[in-house]
Image 1 (tube, helix red, strand yellow):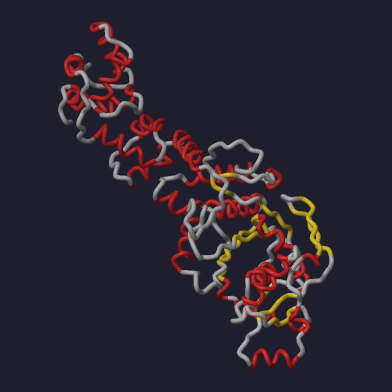
Image 2: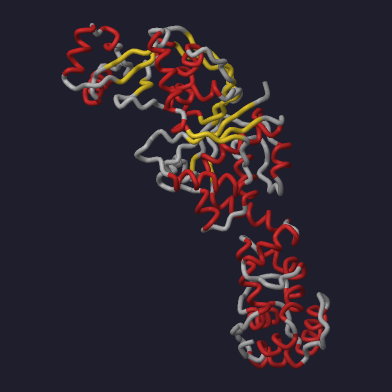
Length: 447
């Protein structure tokens, strides 16, 4: 059987960088060996799941290039979860419980107050048929718990190494709610069995859940997959991420912050690993360089400022062909490679190119700090055609004839020509501005 993984988000909010890190790791592991990627939307929470969030998940993954081979929705598979639950009931592994949420809360508080772990006391197993009839006559509907075997649960985790749980230390999990809705613990295992998931790669917050689910896999007769539990990503301050709060959402990084897909993927593929954080131009290169054995157990922190720096480095390496269509989409009609090579070293985001296009191709109000000096400089502008040698020839003449040099020479010229005190090298920008526009700006005119 070929390696098969799944990314299983719930369409209840925006995907954030922590979600995408897990999607990326699954994707890289599968693509490296020619495996299969399943996108499963865990949308059984009818109150919070929305079509808009589901569409947002697909848009985010597509933007990043994290394609999938098959897609399913849990809401289409409810009959299969019911069938699996019926099998567990028939085998005696799924039993009804009638406590209310308030009653369970009191039990939990009592155990904690006595210094005991808040494990379910299996009261549901002790109910007689008459007691069940009485509860239901009062209007109570049962939730259904999976009866765990009180034996050791062991597995080798590709990130954490050998993991052991004692079954007696685990609480029988609820698999079916009072309204007959299946919970994640059951539906996820049913799906993993049906779709032949060979590797479950997810966050370390699922470690205890895995101990429970291994017994469920076995009870349903399915092969137990290989596991890898990654440390959860935090923000730069060490706080957890929440998709419902929009923390570092993919949508905001794309639509508001102008982050390049490969900048984000380059960073996420390296965080928490032994590899240096470097820009990577293609997904194929990421596939070749990534392995689960590189992932450490230390908590990785996501720093947006580091992402911005990486974004700039990626743009500085980008060819004109790679960005030409996007530059035109930004309104830069007639943009050419000469312009791109001139401004590329000064970009943090691709949209920054717009302002330099306006400097070289649109009207600009110059900033004049020494009008007599810039007017004199205008009179000695070389004749066109201009190229990258023009700036040096012009500046050397100014130095020779005025004795002005250094910042006193360069800054008035830059401010007059561009309206800014920093930016692309003027030897590259000056030919784009052209002699007519440059002369007017040096004389203090809008041009």
